[in-house]
Amino acid sequence: MSAPTRREFQTWDLQVLDTQALGRDLLQIRFAAEGLDALRWQAGQDLMIEFPNDEGSTTRRRYSIRRLDPVAATVDLWFALHGSGPATTWARHSAPGLRVPGIGPRGNVVVDSEADWHLFVGDESSMGAIAAMIEVLDPATPARVVLSTDDPDLQHVVRARAGARTELTWLLREPGVASVEGQLAAALDSLAFPEGKAHGYVLGEISEVVRCRDVLVGRGIERERIDAKGYWSVRAGNLPHGEPERPDALR
Ligand SMILES: Cc1cc2nc3c(=O)[nH]c(=O)nc-3n(C[C@H](O)[C@H](O)[C@H](O)COP(=O)(O)OP(=O)(O)OC[C@H]3O[C@@H](n4cnc5c(N)ncnc54)[C@H](O)[C@@H]3O)c2cc1C
Image (tube, rainbow, N blue to C red; front, top):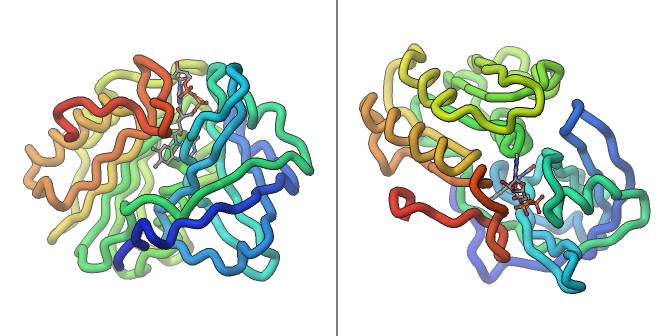
């Protein structure tokens, strides 16, 4: 599969239709927008949204497309709520009728249909992307999913498709702890791998993403077959364009 090119970006006038708490700090927001039925996307892609900020202007943040309903012309995004950045503040106060511009689809981390098996690694921030990606896998292709959360209820929110060879491993953090250094990497170190050519998708806190990528390389998965993408950073808010500052290891 190939991801759309930059030329295909569009701006959508997203309007909140409804909100649904999926867990203590995970909120699904369903947006409607004129023309959304024409949005062509692949699981793993996102929208870059311009949220109002305290300075009276806007800050860009990226949110993965959980699902698109082309008939209803709606899109669902999952917001991990934390702290008081522009996106989280906006999401906490979102209500039907509220509007924000969304640009996309963005992103080139999509399912590699050539892989013999898939490995998804993430946290609350990437649950929307990973839930969308495991839904489109060939059910006969093995997949392993390793997710860290501080909310055990989310284990009911991201599920393997019935009949698919997808196995999930959940790692629990203490409530309110956003990230445990080395937790995901340690789990990957001891995870039993299926046979064949893997593709890894590591999406989450940026320093943990680097640690996980290094463990996977150490376990024999080629670097080119690992999409390692920092979604956020424990050290600071994301940059104005929506991504965390990238350490040299991910350049
Ligand atoms: C391609 C891409 C797709 C993404 N998809 C999603 C998605 O579908 N759902 C989603 O929830 N996030 C997603 N993210 C991550 C999201 O964009 C960031 O978490 C972003 O920082 C949130 O913006 P903010 O304005 O709330 O917080 P910021 O202003 O960036 O940060 C404010 C404070 O919150 C902390 N923080 C930021 N994010 C988190 C977090 N996830 N957990 C705990 N603390 C945090 C920071 O360390 C900082 O202290 C995605 C990121 C990328 C790059």
